[in-house]
Length: 380
Image (cartoon, rainbow, N blue to C red; front, side, top):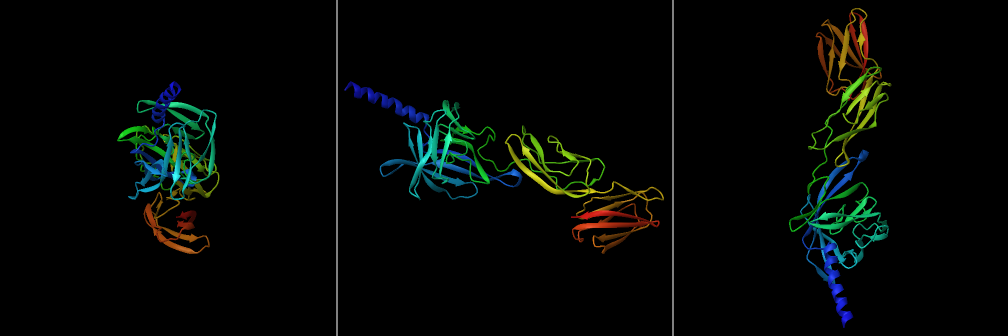
């Protein structure tokens, strides 16, 4: 009789303590999860914000289960992917897919440091995943210290679940995308908040690159060009990174200035990405050709006058500047030598409308005082 009494005391002591430690399945508990995509050059983009909630318990074949509901901000339809079953004595949590009538281990909060656990997540349906717990420490959650489990790049917290979201215990997401837990609450009491975002909703990643095209560079001459981006929140910092630059040019990662002396003429791919250091994601990229002209200037032999043509490449308008207003004849030819356009110049500065000229490489010939000058022009 004495032995039975002691056993009951132990059971009564262990059960509330275990529930207090794990308590993942509490009706009304809510998770806010950021869903993102990662596309070309590893630039991240916000896809959606997802809400995961626990409903009131139901009994299935005499076993207590808690329904899980999910809803995306982009849509109003809430759906029910399955149920959670929690063993508070062992710390194990199972996900039951009621559509496929399949159950698998989602969490094991009873694991110790150095041990391995095999997760079979019926929600992601990616098959068994064996993970080793490399470290266990703790964090303060709502006035209580909770154990934090580290499995490489995967982290669990007692009572919270994975930092990728409640139902992503073994993976951050699917190929080409991922998830991050933003916050977790119970009855409007905040239990957890991601200290990177400090918000329960994220609508976009900043900064965005505002530069649309590069200035023309000149072969053998020093080039300097400043990239620009949108304003970022206070406390954020950015880093620029070059994926591809013309030979001879370099990019300052802190200032976003491209500089150097181009070593090769012609249009060359210039690909640059920008990263927000605080959130740890590349947020935008620019992929445009940087045109390197063969000469920095052209002068006549009669009066050493200088001819400036810009922008080159041109999109809509091309400006021609001379240091005199003498009459000159201008002719434009394509690469096949076909005549495309003629114009008589009378002013020091005049413009040519390029909107109706097909994209390509052209040669502009200027005849002034019987002197001929030819310049290569690129129209985009």
